[in-house]
Image 1 (cartoon, rainbow, N blue to C red):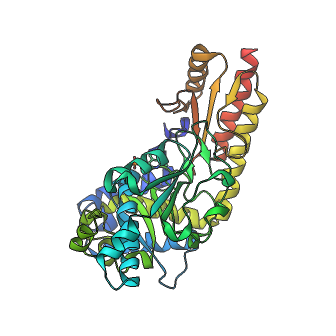
Image 2 (image 1 turned 45 degrees about the vertical axis):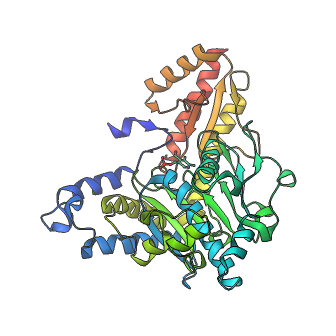
Image 3 (image 1 turned 135 degrees about the vertical axis):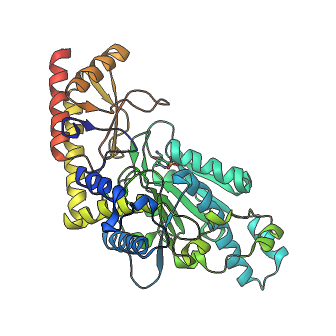
Length: 399
Ligand code: PMP
């Protein structure tokens, strides 16, 4: 049964059982309409209500200003789609600003753009992919890898090679590297006052943060918010304004976004430019409603930190048996990556013993190996306690 299993997979993650139960009933017959939620038009009034309430829960959870300076949209294409969407929209946004400043003079703007770069902080697998996507869409000439780590750390800020602010297209980082287990402790001071794009796919809604520090925040839903298939995007309103049309972008040598990745279009359509998977948004809405009821991100942050501490403490105490992969200070609260010093055989024993206790999904990503505990919002404190207890017991049996 669901109660017997604690699933620590990296995503799609487990969802709260009450949400799954509500969703199951909604599939069969939504609000006594005689039609399931999967069968309703994305333009029906019941769908509109779902989008509106999901949006307002998210806005209240992240404390988004209500003065129209930001928009929330739901998109498809996952976090990977946003690697492209963020690049297209930020390039167009900056080109629009330059055109305005230089009387729409294409050749001046072209020469200005030739000197500009987007700064990517590459701290793991997902930011690396995002940087590569900019290179592939727009050309490597626009890419500056301002910092890069391959050893599960975040380089110190004074070692970052950021482009000077006037010549920076935008700065990009991944708040929590799901595969590598590296998380930024907070907003990087060096990026203060810049146009910052952040990937929060695997730690969104797990702690408080200031959304006004960002031009774009995005998160695939399938870890902390809902099912795979819908992606949350929060975009600052000025990014939507003055984006040049397709012909002008082409004249400037910039890529033209597919319409489904064109933020101004999606915002204008209230996320309904094309068919939105409303069921996915519904599940996100239910999860967020639960978070709001439980005291929002302040409360969730406390629980997340407590669970992460429990698990890291257990692993640290078993130092002879386990080795935590990321450096202290940047250890992710969401994805706890470690190896067994006894190698593959010990890993097999660890996984087998865990499985026997209903603790599943602990194998690390195939690209880095080892173990990974994904400590997302849906993991109850009791499950983290049970896993910490198992880690303690395992140490005893290995000695
Ligand atoms: N960014 C991060 C931090 C991720 O963890 C993932 C997926 N695990 C992605 C981006 C890519 O997301 P998707 O699979 O939805 O394209």
